[in-house]
Length: 322
Ligand code: F6P
Figure (cartoon, rainbow, N blue to C red):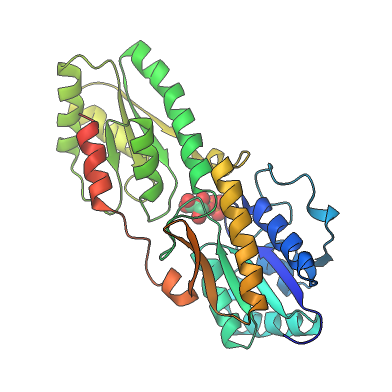
């Protein structure tokens, strides 16, 4: 790049704990390298509406430990039109932006790829609790969301044991079962339902009954929202097992809260790696965590299919749940 680089950053799609840490890292790394930093508010909607805010070192003070995203986010339908994409590229050129960093999930990456095709220099950073982005070992927010689910599951287990009940806990993840699988394993769930693995009500019922027969005082079933809905499943299981089954939907609680140390560190490393990639002239790529190191992969590779669920982790969870 010639002249002063002007790096813009936005967060897009569902917020994830650690997004603030990533923005902080982008701003401070850019400034440490003599570049200007600017934030775009409310994700792609703010880009379309020219909502730019200049950043200083102080603008990103006090946000490292805060959940959500202080620059705002959105799910932008306008960004998935030719007109919206052309307009966004024009806005970035008018604003003198030499490089754009987008922090979000697969929808965010798809739009970024379109901007790249229109000549915008852009790098993606994976920010989503779903951990559904291909080519990266994990995403910003996944660790914190797992901890939130574990904490909630422990609380549900207290009441489940007291009443000797079966509970279904529905967790997020869209069509990807990573969050349910890893949180279910960490929380010691008795059964985990994910979209990637077919399941039958009879098998769940048999596993609950076996647990009761060996003296278990509770059964916790963690279900990914992409596999089944908790309330419908509770009704079906109640009929199939012959005892009352309760349901809990954790919902957006999973997206909030202070990011874990892991997510803060990951976000800090990824934000810096994204700035370095832009300054090195890279574009159309996303930062990934691969075997504990930062790597760059083509954006298209990251969103073309979901992060593949490791079957042996699922099998392990099932063995330990017995
Ligand atoms: O992608 C993150 C996520 O939290 C998914 O797990 C969930 O399906 C979705 O966003 C919910 O989106 P919204 O907040 O728009 O309802």
